[in-house]
Length: 420
Image 1 (cartoon, helix red, strand yellow):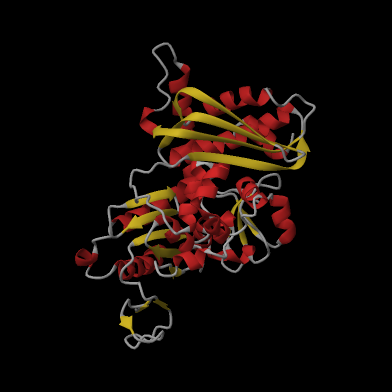
Image 2 (image 1 turned 90 degrees about the vertical axis):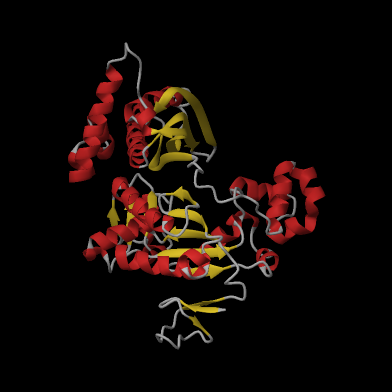
């Protein structure tokens, strides 16, 4: 089956006879697949380029200053080797002509909500993974939309471009794992398909690091046992994988066989909201670390506010000069989205490791275990400070959304920005 990606007509050649369009998608199972992953392309950077046409011809990096890290970047910047989470000084060394934008999480979150609403016109089974990506299950929607899920997704992809001037990439398959894998194959504005007949062979040569939940440390552990490719896991078999890694090993074996039984769950919750920064120079001084920590707490609070969420579990992350990672967690007495509350708890955790002798190259903070924002920061009858802080931070957020991030700054944030 071949579908024209311009007019969504079924055609017999890659060039559409109906409209002359030359972009098409072809797959023998195209009319039988219904699980999709939609991912906005270079989302933050694309929004900045759309809203400021002067940025269009330039590489754009969204992130912090020289001591910060890259949140995301456009595809022009990626051509120079710039990547998300890269230290800003390294990114600017690779691409000195890049335009750096600090970004506006409230704007990005609102754009994400608009696109999600468009997705929900196709199916109620939309599971957000973040503000710019989500799974969709379009099973049984053919009669409603008078077309296959593939045709509905092509129409949605075109609608998002026409109405929002943003591109998205779509992966279509028979389960979530493969749909997400497919969406990464042909960015930007991609539409990729992985069918049942080819799935195992497709996975065979791919690195184990491409499996969901397999980070660098896990990939290294797998490779030490000779499991470098997904095909190696399949060849090892379920029994050996269980012997090596228990239930997790069996889970990896099932993925290697292209098996993923997870349903698309509209109530699936975001696991964490976090922010981190890599320092231009390693830092041992507690006060300097606290200055950086405060700015990260403000970012996490802003992202919680934009997502209408509050977290009850706080995590502090540190990486020392030898690249050893420390993580400290604490359960809060109630859900919070206040920068002040996040900072006070994170600072207590920080003092346990920052003794002035150990130098750190990275610090991060995050919240998890979410509740609706309306349930956050209630305090008790004797606590008069929390409501005041909540009102003050809400006012600051409103001012920043209207006039920009620098409209209101705390003394500590200014100190951290200027290095004073």
